Length: 129
Image 1: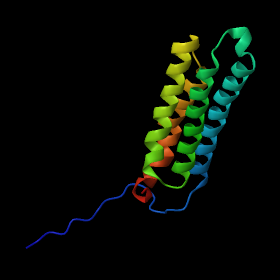
Image 2: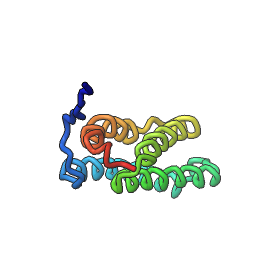
Image 3: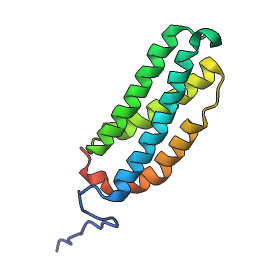
């Protein structure tokens, strides 16, 4: 007398990338590029602002890993879901620690990731490898 339990799914089971998924990632990418633009602007003014060049190797590496995280999310890789917010927080804290700047683009990007991003990512979780 073995009971069979069905797996209940409250989300759409389609592995196809819908407009919500793509637009959520596009919004994340937009605000990521806004942060990169700020980094590039600081690099161009690094002598006037007295910022050491070594800082920019770190911050541009973090920027590249943020973009890699978004690309990995697009291709349904779980590592991208962990890589992107970790690098986003690193970016925010590096600006806050080294330059004493509070980046609203990073905070907005984090809210987009936890809000719209998770609404688009969580339903597709079982398709991630």
